[in-house]
Image 1 (cartoon, rainbow, N blue to C red):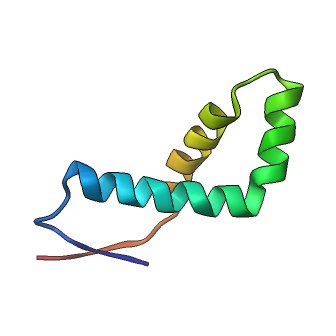
Image 2 (cartoon, helix red, strand yellow):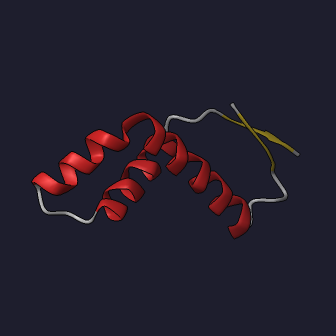
Length: 65
């Protein structure tokens, strides 16, 4: 679960969440994503970014007001 302050949803917070998601995906599925990128001639960083954004939908957010 991710605890967020409702009043602090600025770009910096969003970037922090995306960075956290990116690190999780790279640790869990880095090899598979690299192989996919090579096989389909795609940029690894773009593939990683897309998966990190998809991963954010799996988070459970709790907002404090």
